[in-house]
Image 1 (cartoon, each protein chain N blue to C red):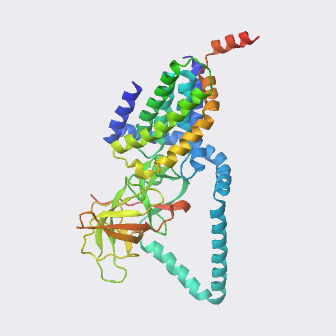
Image 2: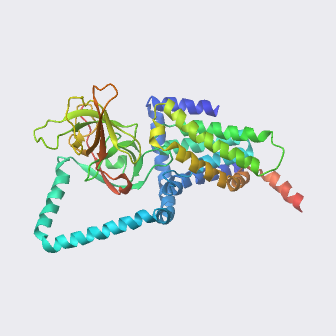
Image 3: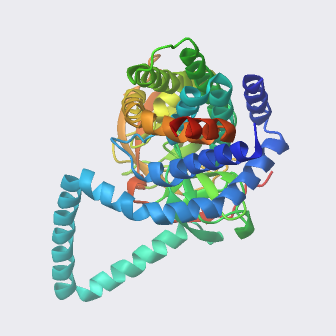
Length: 173
Length: 268
């Protein structure tokens, strides 16, 4: 990974966390909020594969954990698995259809919400009581489905190598 | 490898060892200006959003406030002296329940950061003498406890959080000599009551609207006598040896703006 690529990915991850803690936290829908960090994780998995998805999920999840009051490492753990899973789901895909990443993102968001709540319960966190899990699942799943394609473009830009982009540019000429 | 790293961090965190908390403090301090700036930009959008999606609630609130203003205007005209006395008594009352304990005023800057957190962020931190475990109150009563502190801000765990339990005393509304009954309360989630599920025996008389205060038992992290709420319902537990008492908090968590952190720690 080149320095520029690292810088771009770091910047996008940082913006995702900033949006989560400032904007998303102030715009609740039926008591639940859009999960920008999960969106970034899924988008990274869709755009750049399992390692990228896991890396973004781990780093952004850990930052959210450190900023919040919950157990440190829980978001990092769940989002690492989700990012990796989304990336793996795209490996065997040969067709270029928008429906495939859309379906992958929707399923991943739904799994992420229930996995988070369930792992939290296992760790004694009573997360099913803290939040209305079905409402959270609905809001997170719908918002992720709506925003995953634009987010994938942003992550595609962040993970793109300069050489590849130049070659693509030459190809267009 | 990242999954292993996450599990390691979780393990270290649950053992409450220093490094994770220290890193959390540093992250909070470093990210604080970015967050404040982003929150400053996002705040008008938040207000617009809330106005758009809670229009009927805002309308009802507006009508309620109009009625309240009319009521106060009328009272002002007819009974100015009594009103002044009432305000003075009210002001004294909200001081007396803290019994002169030092406090730090703080502004609530944001609510939970993600869907599975029930926390508030305040704009005061370790530099103001705030430590983990200190009680957070308003003039209405107990808000919660400080869960995490960094340089210029702190995370507050509200009493509605199911992961927070604390000791309370239920007093009889009618019997002035009632020494109170101690029980252990815990939250039941955002917007819900607090439940006392342990300590109130079946033969103890508890009725609706009985006041509930922090107990001040030796293991409690809160000073004694802080108002918590009033009893909203009473029911026997499954084994019928105790009572399950739900308490409606005095504090309205949707409208928190200014809170006070009580600079008090229990004596070991």
